[in-house]
Length: 101
Length: 497
Image 1: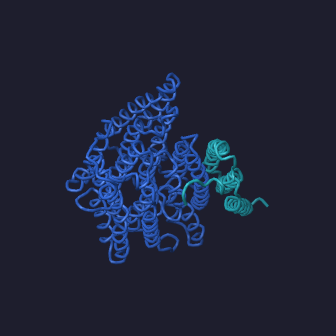
Image 2 (image 1 turned 135 degrees about the vertical axis):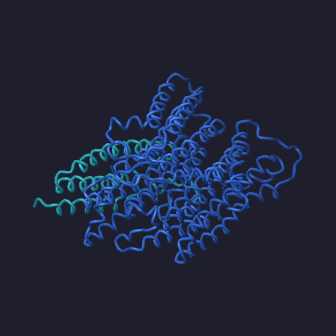
């Protein structure tokens, strides 16, 4: 069971789920959750590759950086979404469209 | 080079970091109505940074164990970034949009963004690429949504953050595959590993290259990753729109050139004009098609706009398309053309945006109608705006013509298989004439002719516009200094330690 392919399969599934979430969800927070899934799928890739290619630390370090950045990005995105709610009284991304298409 | 030794070559970035810290602390001591004074701290820091760059010498080496390149190429982009940051900070004094806000953070965040852009221009490690793109992105989300009470600004920030997070996620997944294929995060090691890769990995390599391209394409707003651009540009404070249209785009191109030249290309591409076919795909043709799509879409949609600000947003997509013409012919000349165009584009595009900022303050709007009769009531604004518009079209003898000339020359020199690219580029320049001249038409032929003539009410605006207008014209006939500068800057760090 402990083979690289399994991990890659999990990460590819996560990536597809994230992509699906971003494309189909209209709630801004749910879109953000889709993005987080994508980031985590990349993380699984990094750690799995590092683990199975002779303990290359770069992959682990990369994953740690991504976790930190994902947190920072989520914080900013949530702050913006709160502000959107204050101004628009909705967080549905389709309803937030004052700008001309 | 080891971490400790690297620090002595890292002065510009260190000074910039210090500037940010000082600006944030200084902001605490000012009341809300005085918060504009933070800008002086930031401007001082940026000046010191510029001095540090100029005094840095022209060492070509890698820093921090091969994550950052120190070379004249990076220095060139750092100077461009600093120049645009300083200009945007100066015009921010005169914009009405920021009037009811505390602006201390605004200037600190601009400085942080400049720091991120510095790293973008010099990253040679995919971890640093991702980190620097995120620094810049997160800061631009803030700035796009800085007008907390404006619905438009909020919407711009929301669209920016969702598209931005999504595309950087896609890019990250591409990087993870690339890391898996090559076992390294450093550009040069990746290149070596790619060279020794057997054909079985082609599909994975193509997928990862396409995903990575999505991230870069988002940064330079290339079709089909451009969707965020018009809305974000229209909703953001105009000062920020001006900044986003030049500085991150320049850094994005630097990154794209570095990545494709050193990782996807065989590294000697700068000298040999060669391009290693990657994964059996015709990359040059593919990039050429993307370039044509980008400029055509930008131009065709720009025609239909009623707001000058939104028109400039689409025109900036078109200009990214022109610059992308230099990528398929990843030769010295292609890169030279891109660098030349960026210098010219900085002056003419910032100039156009600064006029829009000033007109917004005067008439409260940014539609074509707000420009009616401006050529008669404000002759100075009329003349410089007309100049910027002609320069953006690329008419001789303006700077825009020289920028386009070098790009087209590089494309044509690459051989007959790229003539179509030059043809579409020329066709698009003609199309763009229509909507640029429309601004001039509104300024001179619409509205009543009045006799009370006025100069800009602020000297700073006059000085800034002159500073941008003179190069937009003079560089069209005497561009030798810029050409020399680019010649010296065309040195990329081309192998690891």
